[in-house]
Structure formats: C-alpha cells, structure tokens
Image (tube, rainbow, N blue to C red; front, side, top):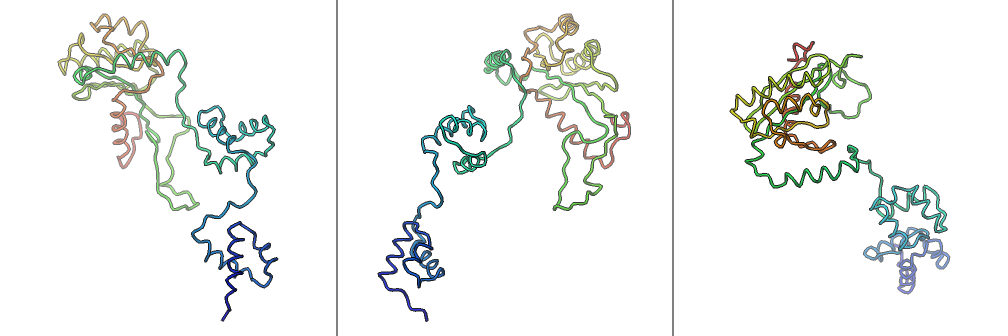
Amino acid sequence: MVRPLPIEIQNSIKSLLLQNTPFSVIRKHYPSVSLSTLTRYKKKFLSSATLPAGGRPSFVSVSTQQYIARMLRNGRQDGPKAVQEYLRSIEIDMSFSGVRKLLKRMGFKPRRKTKTNFISKKIKPLRLAWAKKHQYLTVGQWRQSVFSDETRVNLWGSNGNSYYWSDGGDILQPYQKEPHVEGDDGSVLFCGCITADSPGYGTTVMDGSLDSNFYVDILQISLLDTLEYYDMNRNVICFQQDNDATPHTSGITQDWLSANGFIFEKVRDWPAQSPDLNPIEHVWYQLKRRLNTYPTGPTNKEELL
C-alpha cells in the first residue's frame, strides 16, 4: 500500500497547483513525487477550483479586443485580414493564423454571407414610401386585390430543389441523379392571377418570350375573364403585378389598362427591387410540388399541360 505524503507536502503541492505551476517545476521541489501522484492530487484538490488560464497571455489588450469586436459587429471590419491591418496600424504584428485564433478565442467564427438582391439608394426611399402608404390597409381592402404573376415550369429536371437521404456512400446511385436534356430547358411559361376567393384564369406560353403585345392579349383573356367570373368591378379592384418586368410597365400595357377602365391609382405601383409580397408565389409552389409527385414525368410540353 502506497503511503500518503505528509500533510505539509500535500498542502505545498496544492498551493503550487493553484498557481498553475508546471509538474516539471513541482518535481524539482519534490523529486520523489511521481507524475501520476501529481495528477491524482490535482484531481483531488482542484476539481472544483478555477485554475489560471494556461499558455502565453495575449499581448492584445482587453480594450483593443473590445474595439475589434465592435468593428466586426457593425461591419467596419469584415474578417481576419482587416483586423490584422488594424493591429499593424497600432504596432502589433500578428500573423494571419494568429489573428484567426484570436478571433475564435473572442467567440467569433466565420459564417457564409446571406445573398440578397441589390437595392440601390434610389429605390430604398421609394420602397419605404410604398410600405408607409399601404401599412394601414384593412383586410377588406386587401381582399379587393387581384395578384398576377408568371412562373416557368420545367419539363426536364426539378421545379425546385430535390433531395435524397444518404449514409455517406461514395457510389452515385440512379435515384440520386436528376436527368436533364443538354441544351434544352424544356419549359413553358405560365401566366395567371388569384383573387382573395380562389385562383383566376391562366395562360400558358409554349414558345418564345413574353412581350407587351402578348401580355396585353393575356390580360384581355385571363384577367378580364377572372373579373367577370367573380363579379369584380375593375374600377374598384387593385391590380397587383410585378413592376420589374418590362411588359408590365410599357406604354402599350398602360394604354390597355386605361382603355379598359382600370384606375391607375388602383394599380399598385410597387417599386422595382421590392421584396416579393405576391401571395401567388405560394400557388406556384404548390403547383410545382404536385407536378413533382407524379411517378413519371412528362415527355413533352403538351403532356406538361
């Protein structure tokens, strides 16, 4: 049986451990004490104590670290490179890897930037004014709206993101792939509208692009038929369309709206680059989701319809 060390020596070792004294230094004082004994005493005496932090203390002061943290939080510094340049400006030379370690010790870690649409300075006040203009509309007033939009529906490939479950195998299986015809997107453009009650009529563009004349033809059929079906007064309803598209804002379209009794104050003029507030996007999502549930996909555009 191993005889315990005298109480005086134990207390001395405990005091040295509290000062974060390395084992090698303690053994110089007490050569007969093994490393396993020191480890056991450390667990015994200091299990609930807070030891001083090991390693070399940072030569970046607390106040400097706090300043760097503020700069990172408000975007005036965007990462280790900018922090390194700042430290050099105050005569602190630190390697790039050292700066990264410093930032991690401070609780920072890199994150992928969220991609958003660019918004110009000209558009920002217009968006704010639009929001203030419409912030007090009642539910009843919003129910007088007709929302229109276009969406592209794909023949080949997914109408959204497709996923599969995997346990990490390296061999790509057929079910893990999504076929795509090279050089042919095989898609159609669907134009439609919705009311507060139900969907309206729609039009499918099989080939070509959507110009102003074609868009007016679609409005003549789909929009007017929808208003007639739901007995909605074109002088009362608010017509909402995406103002980023040229056919929607062209002179031809504006002339048609005026000639057919639509009041321009009732055509919501939301600015370009506005966040998509159009609830018809949820209809497109459900449409494409249902298309993806079919066991076999369409082989041509006619089947897609």
